Length: 410
View (tube, rainbow, N blue to C red):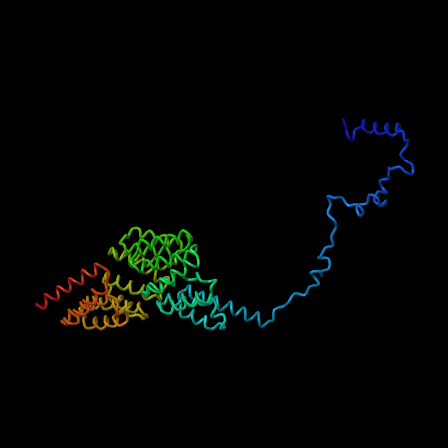
């Protein structure tokens, strides 16, 4: 047995040398070499016979490159760096103004940028969102449509707001086409399911709409707007407790989600808990003080609480589009309660001019005309309300007013 390094092995090696028939191995043909001359002999030099396990030494391709200290880094021209800083500053200001819901100022900030930057996907989406928040749904839908058409890699930007704008306009054809397109782009995009949900909601299919919104939440649990959309569908089904839960879930994810605060106020207003409704509407107005719908809703609650003066101030504030029509409607209702029917008819006719297909406006305008003794105008508006409405409660109230009108004529 070998015992390498032991005294026994050393003695055995020495005896083997002396007993060798060839004698000593120190002759001229001896294979024994001086260890100091192994590398210099050239026979077993690794440069001549490399080991098969050791790789051959290849020339390093980086040996010919200059050192880092010798490379001259390019310097940006001073004018380009200033323009880039101005671009970032302009984009930051516009985005900050949008987050503070100063939408018109945000649009003006975008217009100060260069032409190419104004038509980038980011800026077009930002401008469309500003129009959406100002209730300019026509311009918002056009801006979102251009963004989807010109920027194929950013098609999912703002799809939930784009579809909501089409829902507000009642454009079933355009919303249906958009739903088909987003399914072709991909079924794994959460905002695409918001588009489908809004399409079902516009067709009065609330259950199918909620399934789509829930699918969007499964794909993106942080999509706050989808929670608010589910809450609105639950309100339309008069499932108020579940709606409150969805609005509260949205607020937990984003306390600045004013849509959820407004949804809570709407639920409490329907339940005639006007104190709670006022609190939630005020919270929503603290976040977005320029929203005319929030002001109108708060004015209606103040009207129920008896604070008519502040309600009239809120309802008289400026607005545009459908939000302005809603303000005229609420103001007309308030004037009717104060028996100021002439002024009420004037305000309600303004609302009817802005929103001629709104059945609630025709209903209240008919009541105001009946109070003034104008039965012909009252009959015309009650009939229009019946033709336009899909709400059974409004339809029942309109039929009751028609019966009362016939009784007055008899």
